[in-house]
Image (cartoon, rainbow, N blue to C red):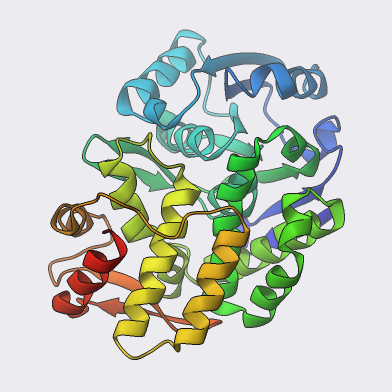
Length: 356
């Protein structure tokens, strides 16, 4: 097991990474007697018994939700709150999010809200959740017209990234997680990007050493940025590379056409193409980015999307403000910036070409 600490003073917490972690209760860091495990119908048969066994000395109840982005709503949030109220869970209780990003975001928002905040543990079972959504304390549910529009910052007490859980991932889900891994190389670490170019096939083949390195480095980067800027008032915004485009695509696709990581991959390619059009990013780096995304099994273009519709959704993104759009763009591999209100004519031309 390897451990990275997200340094946030008295709210600091460990990210444990490695195989065979679910069975050891010491890794969970839970002091509470009352525990509610929130999971879904795909993950529960695979991993819930191990979690229940690890927590057998506590009073454990479970909520098993349907799978998919469509459950990430206020209605589901209310249903989980109802379970806590009906079960008379107290302020010193703890929630456990066992699943991917949807379960983690939803459970974290419940934990942030119930009795003004209770402890929760993240047990991410997808690569995307292990390298991104489980770390940093962003919790949310979706609004029908915009992703993650309703939420709060609420840090977990532990992140338990058991790499054995990745063995059950379908190839498409594994590739979706690689989009977030690639993102870290693009925004701040050119050396890591080069390592990914050399090892992407090993990652897709679930090589344990390669996966552990990719997860550890991704978490190191995110932990460092979150410790510096927890509430996204500055540098943390760089973690949104590809997400403004991606969230708009997800909404247009009714959260069914693309997985989150697939939409982000298209968004990263669109950000690279926009950076090229503005004269910032060399064409050779755009090619490297698009090639690596494709080798990871990810899309880099979206067909049949109206650029005006996409722009309209982007303007409603939670990262926009009164001054207009804020996009993360790339100056060079390993160097990125937040661009305010980039030239709309340039952006529209890129979208027209890439969405044809």
